[in-house]
Image (cartoon, rainbow, N blue to C red; front, top):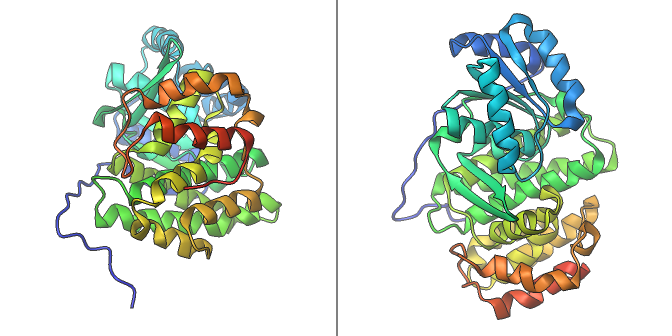
Length: 359
C-alpha cells in the first residue's frame, strides 16, 4: 500500500485568487473587470504578441486604457519604469496581461508599484501567474521577492490561446512548470497539499507534453498541460525555492539566457545533485516516469519530447562558468544538499556540454 503524504507538522495558507478554465477568455475579461469595479485596463504584451494585444483592445472597447507591448524576459527594471510612466499617463485602474512569463512578470512588477489588480491570460505553461513571486533584473543580476501584492487577482485559462505556442516553447515551458513542482516536493516548508498538487501537476504534464511535442495533441492535451502548469505554479507560490531555481536565476539574470529553456536544461542536473539527500521525497517522480531515479526520469523525458539539454546551445560558454559559479553561490537558497562551489562546478560543466546528469 502506498503511504499518504501526511506530515506531523505543517502550515498551509490558501491564496485568494479566481481561476477560470474554458474557451473565450478574451470575451470574459469585460465581466471580470466589472466584478473588480475597473473601467480602464492597461493591456500588456511582448512586442512579439502585439497583435494579440490589439485584438484584446478591440474586444474591450472603451474599457481599455491602452496597450504597452514592451514586456521582455527576466523583467528588467528599466522596462518596468517605462511601462509605469505609460500606466500613469493612461490613468489605468487595472492590468490585463496576455502572454507568457515575461508579460506576467511585467504585470506583477507594475502591481507591486501601484497596487492595481491584475487579470492574467496565459499563452504558455510558465505557471508564474499562480504565484506571489516576482523576479526582476537590474545591472546583470536577477533578484526575487515574494509579496501578496504581486499575485494576480484573476487567471483566465483558454486552450485556444496556447495552441499557437511554438513547439520549442511548448516543451521548454512545460519542463519549466515541472521544475516548480519537483522543487516543491523537497522544499523546507512543503506541506501535504502542496505535495499533492505537485505530483498531480507532474502527472498531467507527463501525460500531455509528448502528444503536444509530436504535433498530435488535441484540445484535451492542451487543457491538461494548462491544468498541470497551473498546479505546478501554485506549488511554487506555496513553498520556497531551492538549487534549481537559484541556478536558473543566476544564469538567466547574469547571462540573459532564455528563461524556460534554461529551466529545461538545468532540471535533471539540479535534481541529480539533490536526490542523494532526499531519495524518498523524489521517489514518486521516478515512479511517474517509470525509472529508478527522478533525475533519470526527467532526463529521459526531456530527450523524449525534444527539450533543450545543453547550456552551450543557449549561448553560454566555458569562459562564462567562473562567473556563473560566483552568481550561483552568492546568497544561496536553502537546499537539502548544501550548495558549494566545488560541487556545483562539475554540475554546470555537464549542463554546458549536454552530458548526462550525475549525483
